[in-house]
Image 1 (cartoon, rainbow, N blue to C red):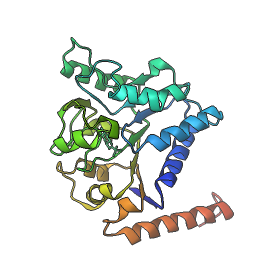
Image 2 (image 1 turned 90 degrees about the horizontal axis):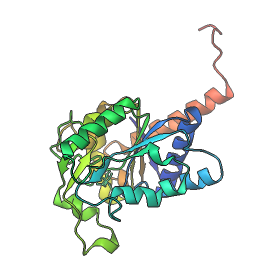
Image 3 (image 1 turned 180 degrees about the vertical axis):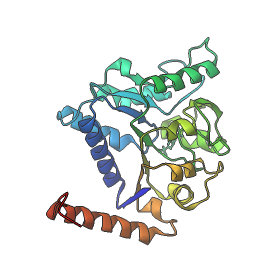
Image 4 (image 1 turned 45 degrees about the horizontal axis):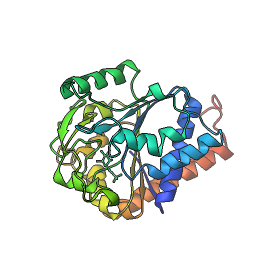
Length: 273
Ligand code: GLP
């Protein structure tokens, strides 16, 4: 696990945007796993600026969002589809038919809609880079505590805490649905690379369990310890409860020194050792 502790949430967004730019540079037709919530907002705005400046393009990319509320009408302003259109898709050059969320038609069985979504991800070749936020209770996507660590896309009941945490200031008097369709934990773990963003003191406990706790369904994000290519981008505040915080900072410093050395003295293949 690559743990990057950065001073501010702006730096977190900057590093994440660079990671997306590199991914699209390397593979323009990448399959991107996207997230909602407050955590990716600054990242989406930076990506929109880069797209406007022609530094990157989503023209050949495909996206799959982690989750969507169940029971909101298509186009409902509180739906994650509306969020994604407003905050990201409408600002970039993503072809409309290449952006996906686990939506369920009014007459459709949600279990079928979930299975269909899982199949679609698979048929698209799987997710290359999955973006994640982190719930205060350790959820990823809408995989609330007690979610099976082997779960696939399905319907989940949200905790009261999650429903309340996801209300924005203007929505406090409104009600949000208590059910959602979410990629499962095993679905998320299938991604080739994972980038998780967490900022602020209210994420510190979940970050500690994610990195240093036991792998368990009580803290679903702890499963990421089992993934080979995970990068955590966290700010100072979110890192405060990490027991081995100083060590993670030291590791990053060593990696930087190593990268600088390799740049200065390129390793010559066959130079004898
Ligand atoms: C919601 C989303 C998650 C997101 C989490 C954190 O529950 N379903 O995918 O990671 O909120 O949200 P925020 O970034 O607003 O803290």
